[in-house]
Amino acid sequence: MMGQGLQSCATWTQKRNAAMTEAGKMERAGAEAWVAGFLSAAGWYAQAKNPLLNVQMVEVLDSIDKYCIAHPDDPMVRAAVAFVANH
Image 1 (cartoon, rainbow, N blue to C red):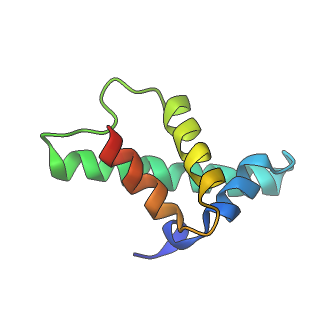
Image 2 (tube, rainbow, N blue to C red):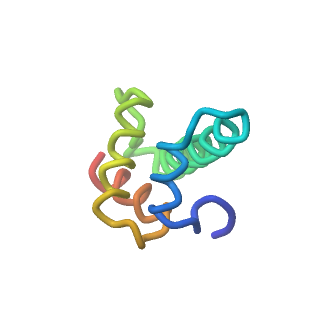
Image 3 (cartoon, rainbow, N blue to C red):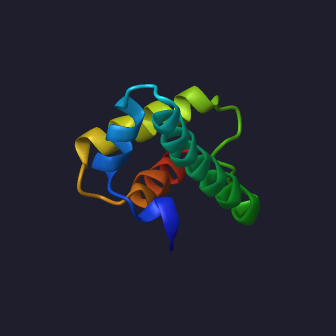
């Protein structure tokens, strides 16, 4: 594991709540893209269980937000894995 997935959930929450400056938008978009990519890969490799089937991205992000608020010290990858487990 490398990249965004190792950042803490507290960092995710900061990025999601950041002022929408150009730099803030880029940071937020990068974190959201990492989550989408991770979940897409999970669906690709699991094939029998696609966590993104019939789910809107807004629902994904809301789920990650809730997990990260409840578990600020966890790395983002744990929030993504929890989403996969629940979908």
